[in-house]
Figure (cartoon, one colour):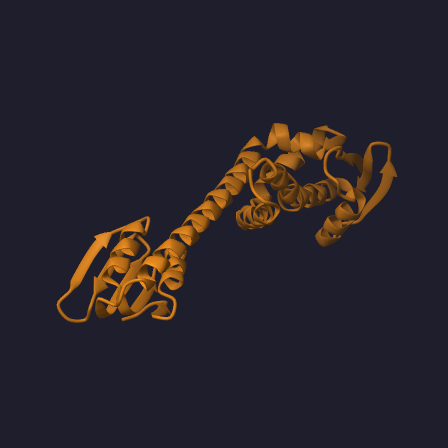
Length: 247
């Protein structure tokens, strides 16, 4: 029977309970004990080593991501509610692309030669690409939150402008595609198509045309959700939204 010491000096987590839960999921026999500086783990043979490596891969890739992303989020100039939102989105994004198999292989190779594993040390020195990916998840969540706030601020101003002018046309139909293509028509003479990846152009155009009724077909599969949200905010009370695939 082989034994290892697993430890952490940074993460505020009940490591023994966490390891017990993850090892139970693997189904291999194990024994845990409290030791100085960490948790002692005893496993039987090669199968036990592989089970421990798999359990630790879940701990590193899944269970510790909130701690690392929280530290990155705390560096951002955001209010508490916004930081929590960025953190939640970053954790979700990171967990959607977990690669447990590669991490388990690295851990298995390490545990064959070493009897002690420091979780944060393994992350820092053996998995720098994972830490970089988590940082990118945080930065992406932060950028998207700022974009949503910009849309919300712009929507408030444009809604005021729209409410101050009478309708200039009875109805407009807008189709939004995932690649940024916008198709606009009035059902009769007007029909135009152009690329607008930011959505700023179409917002200004629609406010200027001030339709009494705006019908929006969102064919983007969620890629234009910020623009769709802005349209529903600006044209509140006169917009009709359809999502999905249409013939």
